[in-house]
Length: 296
Image 1: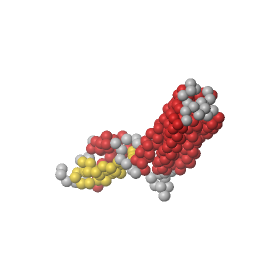
Image 2: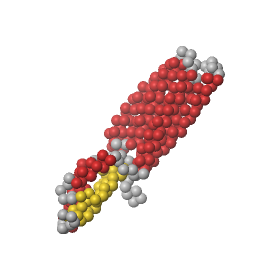
Image 3: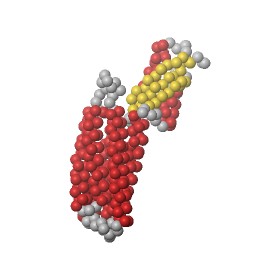
Image 4: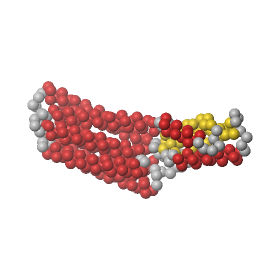
């Protein structure tokens, strides 16, 4: 990541941090004041977003450092670790919100009419929060795609989930104004489900980043066919491709004519190396080993 890219990504995180602090305070204050469980749950979600933004801000500074003696392949996997922690935070938040909502629903069933309806102003607060989150989602998605940052893209997905969650908050609080107070808790429960879905998706992806999982078969096959098409390559004896966050490392053994000189075989390997990296921009490095192919 270039210096300019790093600055723009970190600026996006700082903006997100400030917005999340404002949203968390807005939702929690008016949620408790207006007796709106859905808004309180949404506020807790925003509070977790504050912690996430702080963590991302710290980790991205590590992940964007240049390779050094201890980390010759770079520091990008710190971002993968952050991605995993994001999933844990989302998972914990979802369980808490879901449990609290279920207890609220049970309370309504056991003691109907004992709980006051949320105030009308909580609906307008939710609508305002929805508009802000919608803007933040598009802003993060644009920055994440522009600079190929998995963590920023994950947080963009988080903002999208927040859009859906806050939409449920708006609907639940609106219905509650007509005396159906339980819908406030039902909305909070669906907010928890949205966050849980995001958590499981992020945990699955982060594990693939941290364990050097291979990309999809179609991608590996495309690399395989590209190597075979290069002049001088008789066979692809072994091919391994592994993820390095949103990039790839390729290790390949190629077969060339056994009567080639060392210099000629080396030139073929160089062609493979350069052509793979040029054809697939997400390949960080292509390591080529040459084997003599004797069946020619």
